[in-house]
Length: 174
Image 1: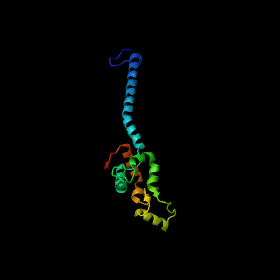
Image 2 (image 1 turned 45 degrees about the vertical axis):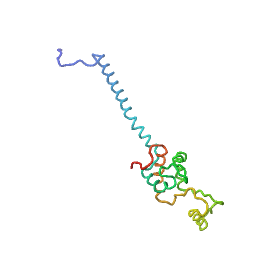
Image 3 (image 1 turned 180 degrees about the horizontal axis):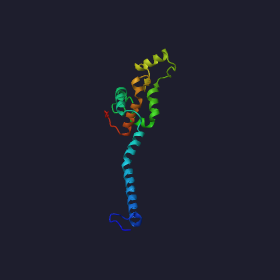
Image 4 (image 1 turned 60 degrees about the horizontal axis):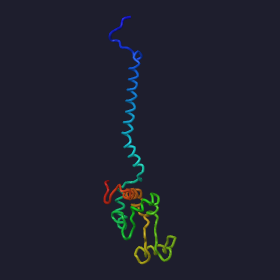
């Protein structure tokens, strides 16, 4: 049988070429896998950081803070003569402790404890404190304030971002 000039030899007849081709394909596959891993590390780190952030909007939290908290704790949340530095406190409280403290805590400084039950006696004590005739109200509970309760996660997001240093004082970007 005569050989046709355009017929090529099979890879089996040249084992060295087959090995080189296989080696080349494996090298390309390995380099591709390395390149994909290097490209994907940055988004993975960003996703991990995003998961670690508390839920809520930092900007909305800043608005609530400026409206309801800055009067006592200062515009930059570092405290005043009347209220503590929240940046130090937020880190130690955690999200659940923060929510509990903001929504439910009243701390009274009275010669005797205030009446436990709601009613006219408790209301009279509260009025005396609010009008500065008796005792000191250290931290008001914001449980009945719709703007605070609706945005408590936002408020925590803002204050924890300030405490971590990822947001500076003043208005954050929306």
